[in-house]
Image (cartoon, rainbow, N blue to C red; front, side):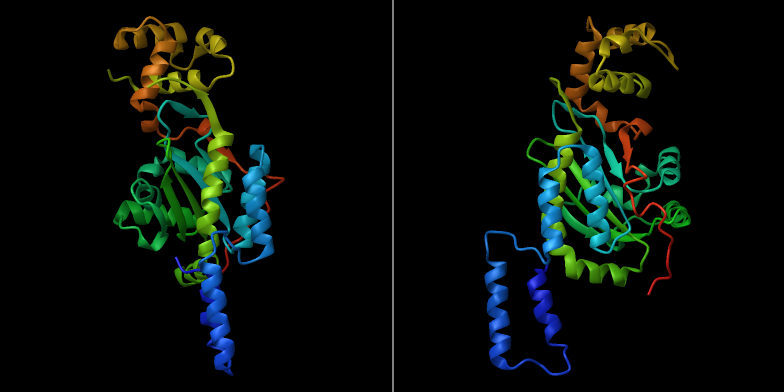
Length: 308
């Protein structure tokens, strides 16, 4: 990804009166110094301050507010940070944080769009960053998905950053735009270098803020796996073991799980499910998703504009 300093240098050559050679040489030297620096130099003080705040954030609400500010500051309208695969032996209290409207979130979940969304699919295997326009998935289902997204004021253009952390956690950050792809390319040209650096800070902070309790590493059905995941992240697991659920009493559920896995307790089953990575195969549930608080989100009521 091109450094912003090089972008400024390139733009200077489009001035009506080209700068003298000594000015051009000086600018080129500045570009080399900035690009070669071991310390990341941000394009603006505002972006630098946002990056510092994101690195030091201590609660999810403040984190969501900062992400909304970053999204607007860089020319996008919405964001979504999402966990694709959880770390070995760990589970997260939240797998998605987004500024997208609740109506779209419900439609996304109900429609099983995580298995159709071309950005989500590409993020499963592509490291680094990519343009939404670079996704390879196509066909009637994908086009129907994009049309549905546009009907909910979710643009089909944007950029996504995805990576696998050292602990095995795979995570992505999408920034959405209702503008055309040419406008997104311009945003990427101006802010892409900084956003790539900031995405690593975002991943670190979200991993920390959403981390659940540590647990060690047959095939269960989806309801049984979700029950074990809820047990793993519950602050009162003993209460959950006694409660009634929509699929029947939890005692009936626990007995079925113990028989299938050959264990004596639900906690042993949790350890096995986590170590096998079964939680990663669950469709996103409404309890996995955190929406930006309405009072903090200045872009919830964003109205689409015609692409330039």
